[in-house]
Image (cartoon, rainbow over all chains, first blue to last red; front, top):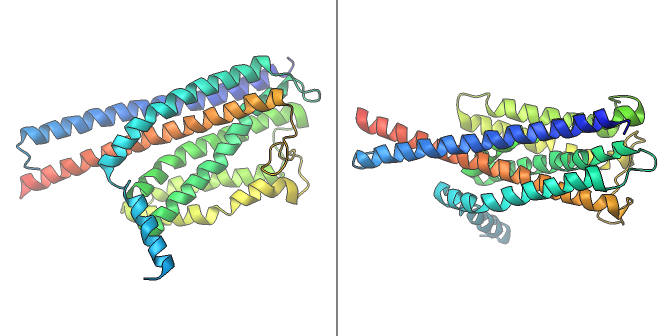
Amino acid sequence: MTHLPYIAGAYGLAAMVALWFGIGATLRLRRARTRLAAVEAARTRGGGDA
Amino acid sequence: MSASQTLAARTGSLFHRFANPGRFLRLGARLQPWLTWPALALTLIGVIWGLFLSPADWQQGDSVRIMYVHVPAAWLASSGYMALAVCSVLSLVWRHPLADLAAVEIGPVGAAITAVCLATGSLWGKPMWGTWWVWDARLTSVLVLFFLYLGHIALIRAFDEPQRGYRAAAILALAGAVDLPIIKFSVQWWNTLHQPDSITLTGAPTMSTTMLWPLLICTLGFTLGFGAIVVARLRAAVMESRARALLSARRGGASS
């Protein structure tokens, strides 16, 4: 495999980008869900005056 | 009302059924595992098949294995931009609120996959052509696509009033869609260093099935993965927007 560094570079780059966006989207979704739940809970506690 | 107006109204009402954030969140939550897990499984199978089980090319040797990431990335660069253009039509014609949010979320993912396409192309080009880059019609038109994505990302965030940014970016996305047929047909219209398409809608594939299968599996896996990431980002954006709206309504209620 004389072209191994090029192959490893291509697959490594694709994996890094996929992981970056995949993990980023998962964490963002989790944060957004937690925040929305907290805001909705506060709204319910406040007697729905929002 | 004329027939075309009726059709436009019907199409608009069909798309607006999914404009309700609650309905979209329920649909997105149901869709998410059906995109994520098959994407991971298919990509893993395709990559292992492509790297270790498929044969080396008689001319290119093992560097042909770069194809299993380069071709799916190229397909997604174009189809991601097509999705952006569809969102732009939905936004400009029917003022669909989710289309604007979808365009915001597709842009960065599309730009990243276009960058992967360009970089893996360079990594394939160096051992095969002896150079990282040539100003070939296919390569240049994909570079233009990358700049269109960057322009869209910048423009959508360039205004204080988000609606103005959405409109301006939608117009750019629609105008930029002219680059898609140029990318597709560049290898036919001009003499290019880039090889012609191996898979077309009208003819039989010009590659061996031992290479075609892992390529198709990788392409399907990457496409589902792209969809999974965009749906997850869009669900997060809808939730963030809903939380912001609830907070501002509470602040408004408290101050009055």
